[in-house]
Length: 224
Image (cartoon, rainbow, N blue to C red; front, side, top):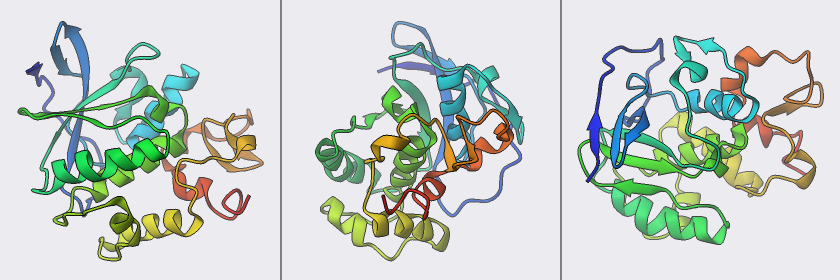
């Protein structure tokens, strides 16, 4: 068991979400001890900003969220979160369906610790770019609906997710790239177009949160 102190009680200017899962960033303050580093939040795109700050050392604020202020673990260490409002099949879907599939993709497993709040840890590989973190958090969210899956192929073929998440997931499953970013794009922290990406100094960084895997796998790189 880990000791977790939730010291934050504020909120962010977020839109409503169809999925009830809520996240809170945690920071280590001792052996098996954490305390909150953020308020509870629901918009997974905030972690795109975290990836940008983690990889570049730069930060900005959007909707009250600032990855630089919240902070991140030292390079090479896992990112820890508290999560709540979980569905009954959530643990089964993560541990018995998602994680074995991640093994086939040569991606790190999602770690869960069953306590109050439930703890979730993500390997820093997911924060190397906004594509990886956007995709893994979408899949985690898909695992938190009231649907119990037997195998990941059932998640891939599912057409019963709420409209917003279904649209994003259809974009992923149609391209069938999953975590296989084409080699020529792996240098980018975020990517939208040849003129609009992390390698272009003039690109507007204040909307990095919106550069999800859907933009990465659009017509620009999805057919490579």
